Image (tube, rainbow, N blue to C red; front, side, top):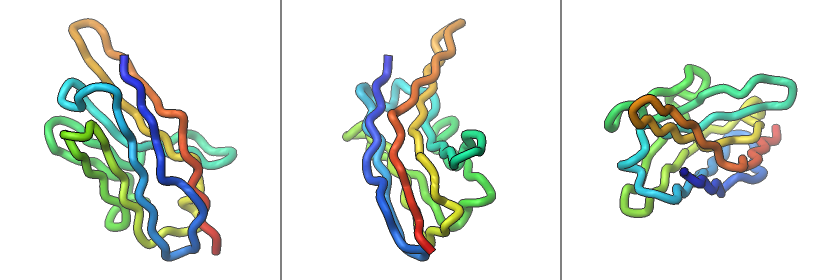
Amino acid sequence: QVQLVESGGGLVQAGGSLRLSCAASRSIFTINAMGWYRQAPGKQRELIAAFTSGSNTNYADSVKGRFTISRDNAKNTVYLQMNSLKPEDTAVYYCNARVVRGPYDDEYWGQGTQVTVSS
């Protein structure tokens, strides 16, 4: 089991910045992959940034160059630094963790944090 607690969302003007945090209930060394998704009203949830194997990262084209995923292993926390925010970045942002153990492949989600970017 992994509990994920997000924080850091809020209201910001276009061009501004926010940093989201996702604190995991266990060592992130024991988690195979962690990332950030978002879901805007009326749209599907989409992957925007993730750690894959090791320290490899993956970003959606829509956020490349503006968002950065990072982590603090000692704090079991993953961050999403969001710069140059646009109104289209408005969404609920979710932290995701995936744990693979033998035949078991489990996914965990945080509760979500709202990000609203005003024009």
